[in-house]
Length: 417
Image 1 (tube, rainbow, N blue to C red):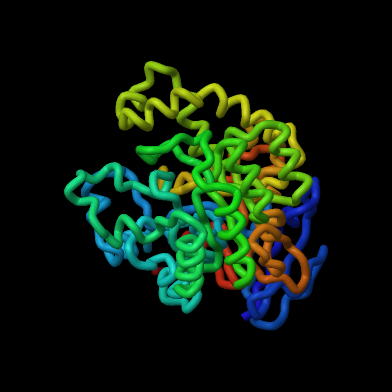
Image 2: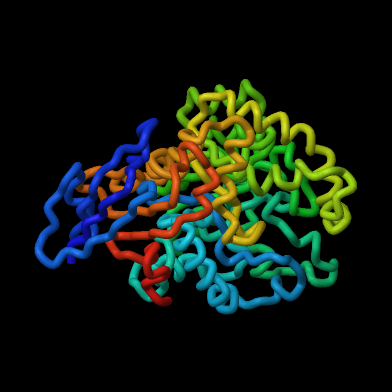
């Protein structure tokens, strides 16, 4: 059945303004856009007066099988249990208006995000379309190595602890090929330490230039793009030299390193809500006391540097793609990345493009990210104008993916799980 959307102001994913338009959808694609379209016989009419219609949002950095609060109970869940707990997560992300997500690593011994991706594509599960990097390849002692949290007597050969660990060029090649054999859309690796891991530092590179070169070259030979977890300058620089497509986080990057990324055409996925919501808290905030000692020490060490670096990103011309690190915080809050980006000096237009046309370019999804005739009908709407008030991105009440309506202002959620 054709669907004619009327009454909305349309933002196409690129332009600086919104324009009143009608949009005709059929066979999962945008058939026509115009001022006054004639509805085909038996077409469904959707009146979105007072709304802005935009392309479906894309979150380029989520972890759908990671569920706060973190603790021994969550870590003990099987891969199946984690996947089952991800079903409402996928639904919540879609209802937030995110019709596409890139999942950048689970902490499971198997490949549950691959199965979830395929289940969504097959229509078995309701959720955004997914692109997946199954695990984060990491040096031992790096951000993906959590064996430091396990007592010595349990640190023998363990598939759970060793699945993504790789040291040296030969082992790195093997890990990359294993991920791709399992069906990876992307390869992710840890170029620097992180805040949540026990035995590293966010500012320090954890792979040599040679190791990164081999990792990226192995994936490139097999046609799979690569992105690293990376905070500090040296790790980012090595990754850019190696040929990665995007940098995840990058929250300690200097102005010089951002220019290096600009020149190389490397995208930045800054995950600012996850990073800055903590860094902006006062030193006597109870959050600090609740953190593990090693995480608190690192967060406080880099707190001011994180705040300063956010302003450098806004002042740069690096290509920003929207990503949130959802899973490190409740997934349904992922829309808050929009106002956080704007609070650092990024314009609403740039933030919205980051989640639509720029994200589609990063992910290589040419049929998505814009409202144009012939494109896939991933369309969402919200009351008000997000270019004037970025907070309305948290009020999405119309969601269409592949021409199927999942949520509408009149009837609420219209597709059951």
